[in-house]
Image (tube, rainbow, N blue to C red; front, side):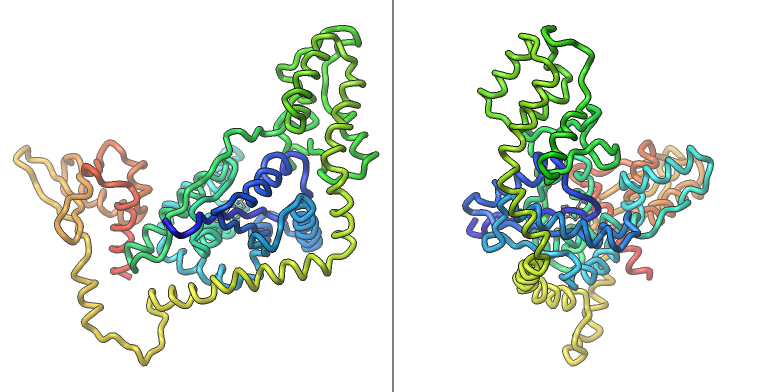
Length: 433
Ligand code: TRP
């Protein structure tokens, strides 16, 4: 393959970067961006921030802090494409095109949306209480981020894998309908990167309020680290490295030799106060040089604006012509290039179809076959024709989500994927509209 591997990831601008973000995302991404043969895209997902943050000042501050953090950590904007999502006006435009090829049933199954619905169910509220259409559409916006630049690989945390799979579904549906425009992206999960525990020992996360800010001033960093949860063992008593948040955080910054030394010190009964001092010094050694750069960027937001602007220019060199091709593909066209009615007719003829029939066993069945007559989906037998008709109606209504809804009555034909069914059902819906 001559095309370089394209790697892309976004960072939602809803908070202040902490050590967990640094170890889990920023540091590995900056390192990966230096690898030869890859083309990296990093962006500030500020449209995504609007889904959960309703405070304009916080969105703005977070965008500034995250941009400054990535630059201070060594991201080279000459080498990578570093931009702000909302500067790429083609992204919301693509979001709409993808919205129109995404089954609603697919989005119903998104973890974040389902969690909100389940939470409402537990509280005895209406299923969609307090759920915005923004939350529901989150995976489509994310799909547009990824597909806009035809990224091959998307480094994300485990909680985001489903979103990448959905982006693949959207790409496959679009390609199936309109031709091969999109690369099917894959999630890249860094197995070697540890999730960092926070002050209380649970995963470091803003939602647990247990974070240590990446660029806290030196004395504040010391205070925060003194607050890391330890047990009540006294100086001289051997300490357990297993389950020790302090040890795990240390390990994420230290060399293997340094880690081994601390392990020994634990066994020898190091005092917690002394271990905290070691941890503080070790982190500060890595962070201090970046902290100065960070502070000077924060003090000169105009410099960041310039960098992001240059990044947007670079990104739009790709997104603008690509969007023009996509508009053409879906039929948002110059009217002087009217292709005539023949095309529309040909498309109509090439639709998948549901067939209902009765077998010798006296039961009622249906199947879905593609335009070429290939079997895609086979139902079980029903007692009455109206039950079979209901099964079809449910598939038409829910798209491929119906598959997991009624797994006992539906069977995929050999070699047929759920994505293929989703596309076929979508074609039917679009043709009926
Ligand atoms: N949703 C991602 C997160 O919260 C951020 C994000 C937005 C993203 N768009 C993206 C990540 C595209 C990868 C690719 O972590």
